[in-house]
Image 1 (cartoon, one colour):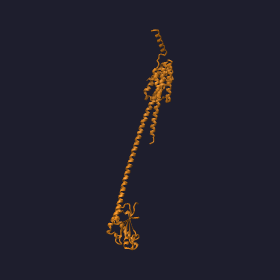
Image 2 (tube, helix red, strand yellow):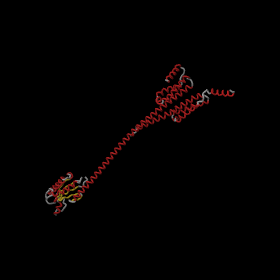
Image 3 (cartoon, chains in turn blue, yellow):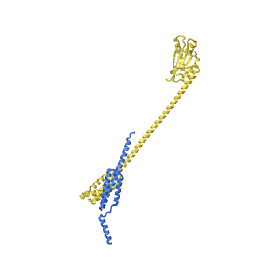
Image 4 (cartoon, chains in turn green, yellow):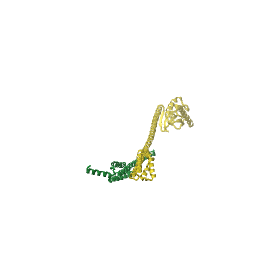
Length: 118
Length: 290
């Protein structure tokens, strides 16, 4: 191995060790982004409790990005996992709100029909 | 089973006083216990299972490195997955409730529709009955009208026929049929002569066609003799004619008789012709109509 090649290898090794040996969590970044977008498209921002979790997800995502910039990919991956969990919860809460509202309307319509004068 | 082992491990750790679980893990354990009792267990068991695995991961992480930030993160993620399963369970139950309400509403609508259709059918039947009744009544009215027209024509024809052989005049008091006293009775008698029976039969036939009319048989004399005798004779003659007509089919309820003596002359009592005119029997057919 030449002197130059040895230097390059040493530099690369130093970078890997410096990053704690954990690669950038590309897949998590992508899936988290999809989860947040999915929650928003499902109307999570219109449901207060769901909107709160969308906000938490966005904040955790920002923190994760910051950790990546600082080279802590492991911590970033954990924050992205939290963000995705919050986004998925927001989506479920939006669905819960829509479903319970629809059920209430159906029940009211049924009751209204039953009590409708002839 | 997995939860039991987690609990045993947690208890052992606690017994050793090794570590206090983070708040997120405590919350996750509590939330999972509640979720098992809610709709998630029935409606979204797969999502609840995912949450259970996340909780197990958190417990393992806690057991291996209680103080690590990863322990808090894993517990946080487990809690969110449990909350997600709970929300999806409630949503699925709401879907079920909605479907049930819609089925119930459909059933109610169907019942109402059936009820409306039944009422409509009944109303149509009633209208059809009323229409039939009306048509029947119209037919009856038309038949009655035709019968009345026919009866009136028959009555008019009978009177026309009678007028060819007897004196028939229309006056204010009604239609007056006049029979000559000399033809019907012998002088001073009230017995109907056989020769008068043909005329009286014609009169009876004509009167029988005059429905809804009343008949007055009036006996009249000339002024020969005293009033007492003439009044009595005219009354007896009127009764004799009335009885004859009743025997020959005229309704007894429709006919009355009265003697007028010589009080209503129609001719001059100073001449034989005039006295002959005064000796008469009049049958007055009233104008009818009640």
